[in-house]
Image 1 (cartoon, rainbow, N blue to C red):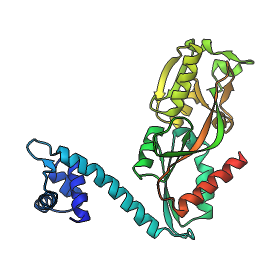
Image 2 (cartoon, rainbow, N blue to C red):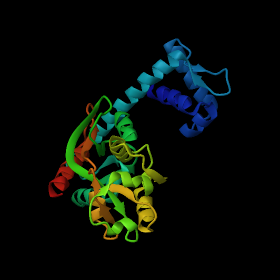
Image 3 (cartoon, one colour):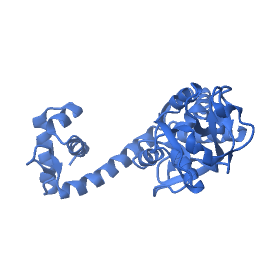
Image 4 (cartoon, helix red, strand yellow):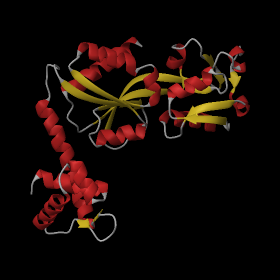
Length: 294
C-alpha cells in the first residue's frame, strides 16, 4: 500500500465517480481503477460499491476513509512542520474570521503582520463560526477569529476583547435625530437589515430580541457587512453592528436601545492538538499587540 492509493480512494469517494476523480488527479480512469483494486486486494475488503450510477463507499470503505483522512491531515501537518522556517523569512498562514471583523479588525492586523513578516503568504477567508471551527479541526485553517461560547471538541479559544453591538441608522433615517434611548419594543415597526441566520452575530441579535420578548421587523437579510452598510446609508433599514464599525464611519448614527444590547467576547481559535507554525505563533503575537491598543 502506498500513499497515492489513499489519495485515489478519497478522490473517488469525494467525486462519486471514477471519471471525475481521475480528471482531478490527472491520471487515466483505467489507472485509477487498477490502483483502487490493488488497495482492496491488500486490505482484503471491497471499499467501493460500483453497482449504482454513483460510486459509493461500502461500510468498510467508510470506516477506512475516515481514518485515512485523519492520517492525511496529520501527514500534511508534519510536512508543514518540516518546512517551517523559524526566522519567518518565508511560510504560509491560513486565517478565517466572521464577517464583522472584516470591517474594522482584520485590515490593521494583516497590515502590521505583513509589514513585519513580508515573506509570509497570508490567506484570509470570511465565513461562519461553525465553518471556522470545522476547518480548524480538518486542518484547513491555522487560526480563526470569532466569539466565545460553546466550541466544538478540540477547539482551543483565547479571549481577546469585549465588543458591543448597537442599533445603527443612516444620516437620513428618522431615528438619526433620536435624543434618548429607544425602547426596543418600537423596533417591531422599524424595518431592519441583518446578517443572515447562519452567522454568529445574527444569533447574538436574535437572542437579545428573544430575551426582550420582541419580534423585530426584518426586511432585509444579507451575508455581507458591506451590503448592509450600503443599505443603511441609503436610508431604508436600520441594522445592528459592532460599535467599532459605527465609529469608523461618520455617516452612520448609533441609536441607544433600552434595555441595552449585551456585550460579547471576541476570541482567537485554533485546534488544540495541531502543530502551530512559527507564522501562526507570530500572527498570534500580532493579534495581542493590536488588542492592547484597542
